[in-house]
Amino acid sequence: MKTKPFKLLGCAALSCLFAFVSQAQSVSSTPVGYVTQTINAGTGNGRVLTGFALPLYSPVSSGTVSTTTATTVTDDTASFADLSQAAAPNSVKITSGSLEGMLFPITSNTATEITVSGDLSGLVAADTFEVVAVDTLSSLFGGPSDGVIYGGSKDVADIVWVLTSTGTWSKYYNNGTNWVRDARGNPNSDNLAVQPDSGILIQRINAASTDFVLTGTVPTTQSVIGLSSSGLSVWSNTFPTDITLSETNIQNAFEFSSTDLVYSLTATGTWTKYFHDGTNWRRQARGNPLSDDAVIASGTALLISKASAGTTDSTVTTALPYSL
Amino acid sequence: MKKSLLLTTLLLIASFSYAQVLDFTSGITVDTNYDTFGSTTSGSGITFSGSDLGNVVSAYWGSAQDLTSWATATEATISGSMTTASTSVFDLVLYDSAFNTVTLSGGSWVNLDTSGSDALVIPSNSFAWNDVTAFDINTGGAGDTVAGTLTGVSVVPEPSTYALIAGFAAFLFVAIRRRK
Image (tube, rainbow over all chains, first blue to last red; front, side):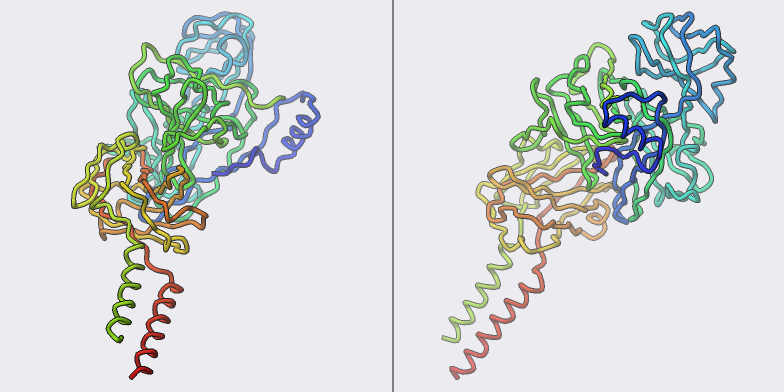
């Protein structure tokens, strides 16, 4: 994993951003650019994991809420195209108000009304939102010939692990032609959506690493990521900058307790576990070293393991770690 | 005199060999504070079974292990057998009595399964190799099952160590010949 404070590279617009930020001034447009993320090499015989998240995103339009229900948002001035195509899905990202930072997958829409999965309670008129393009496994990683992932037989292909809503893992790989799920019948999974706030694990056996270049827009809101009331959840650093474990704010999530654990991948592909003792983050190891400042790299994913079931699902709200 | 010199040589070689083995088959206790597999110990080694997602084999010795000869080594060999092997990786973290650590990385459950041993990379470090009190074996998978028994870790002496032993043996040989 790279540990540079910022992995925004090579883009003039981002250079401008840094210049502006360093002078504590504001910019008038949202910076865009690209980041380079590394998919760690395997050992040739052993598979090495990479926690993978998307630190940039792709807004396609923005709007202001006219009216809303628990599952719909209406913008009377909009003229939306079809936003729910299987191969080109979209989500709604709330950019102001009490739901700021939350993402809702779009299930259908009309020219002015969008229906989402999830609960929009709390969204009110005059709140703002964006429609953001959502990648699929196919659009994000392509196929083996694109040079990002290894494909072919399951034995040599990169395996993408996705945590399902029920807390179990689904595994996907590219068979050389399509993305398929590693399950009976190998269902085609080219169009599996990879939401901008999701985190996945990539498990590589090939002894060569790969740099993955992701283009998009720098987030301008806090991130809000779901935390299951039981079992495993994935939290992702969706900012193009490293932050500390303390800055993730996982410790302040509803019902997060001192017995819950956060799993972080080491450079060698094994897990380091942390817990929060009520005051500080500590590593679960002999001596329980203080770990508030443990670096959570941009574009990486953590696992959160609930020791015992809580009463309800909640969220982790992480403040924007930079000024724009 | 000849016999005593030979005995000295054998003891020297034996001491090198002894210091290079981390034995999991005796004098070791599972550390239930940190072991998450529910591992058990026996004369066969440490036996574990469970998910490779973040589980840890953890144990300690009753007295500090002196692994001074590992300080200049670059590779160790972990031995054992697997009943269920995933394709994920693992590493071995050694602790001294002050909780300082050194991480030997690059273990593969598949290699352990197919050959009964696997190589671990020893980083250059300033670890207190004469004061090894405990270890963790950290898994790197995402939820596949691993199960097996680990018997120990050894280090193949560096060429310089072999050269030292050979040089000393040659010296003794010459000394014995001169006495004749």
